Length: 260
Length: 64
Image 1 (tube, chains in turn brown, purple):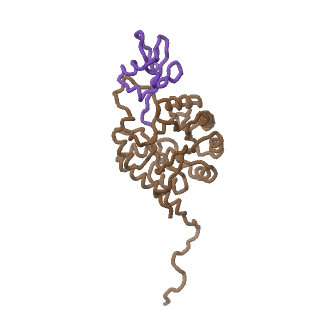
Image 2: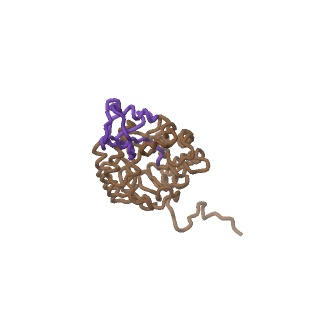
Image 3: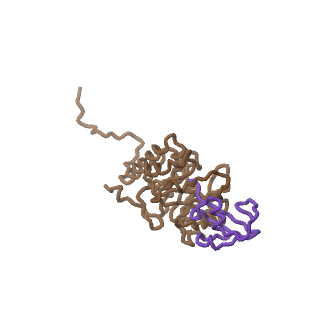
């Protein structure tokens, strides 16, 4: 059996041991983030870029992110491809590397990503040397265009952002896993460890979880649960699930019964 | 000049690095866009601000 210790996967030439990416939004107190990172085992963590608010009390999320974490800035707030490119370049200018999660959202009601704009931004940024991880609908054609555009992974949503509703797009994600030769990282909507486990069992390469951990009654406990669920799902995928049947199929021999 | 969308009057000879520091910010954690051009961090001390400039100062915040 393959040991999970050796089961690394690669993004942008970097090998990662943990298949759980975490976010830094929505925490009641950012001071819990180091414990969440430790409990989850995550190596990749997302952040957003915003104007400095001079009125707000001092406090910087960066104070709470362990130095060992790989930062994955997102382009949230972008409504067009050009805005996403602008935000990506700004994020890179801080000097935390060239990874970028493209998020282009023009619909504030459902927060669904704009596939066309995401492809355009990916093309521009990949050509500039960014390691581009685009957040998109679970759509085969969008995913294929992202491969051509030079994406380093594809991040389909499980359900709309922050809904905790799980793998509503299960069948479309299954198709992406089957057809797309890039890491598939299920992002958005995963609300419970079992959702993450199922995504991994299906063969997803990783998952990204923010709301479900940050808004849990016990974020550290939930981070640990997600970490274990992701490993269990991955191990289940590697082990190869048995065939599903419609009719019962006895596990014990149907011969040699005692008689009367 | 305009800083993060807010109009501000500028004292003479203010360098970008000094303006950032005067706001209590760590320059290594701030990214600056001056008149839509990104200013590299190493250029903060030698970038002179002028009336009419539009400056954006951004930093990382929590996000998913």
